[in-house]
Image (cartoon, rainbow, N blue to C red; front, side, top):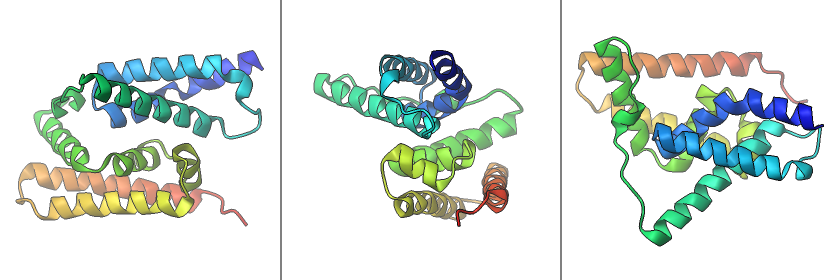
Length: 190
């Protein structure tokens, strides 16, 4: 079980990092969060039941670790504001602007909606997996994703028709299309 457990952890690292970035909005903090969550998982691997949803178990550990760390920071007054530029990626100037604008809009979302949107759209999790990882009902998970999408759309519709806004709408439309395609090909529980 130990080798299989370690293999599953390693395979899940990229998805954990994406989730950590959506929570912390800072690359260094995200890397630290993933490392701490993996350490927690390794020390608690005896409590994992083989055959159950490993990704949801790991995402839950990461999320709980984030909440614990946030509580500690609040107690010590060590909360720092992270600029949205921490999420910028290299590439063409216009693409960077579109990504920066999307990151800014994502930052405005409530944390639970942002996390749900990232886990479903970027990581391809099903609503059931999201619900299990977040510790909520499936309907709540669906609602969080729906509200996040609707709010992003509202913000985008309310902005000027700049080139960057058009590109950002295109990015959001592609994300929506990708989710629709994944949901259409996902087997339905009968």
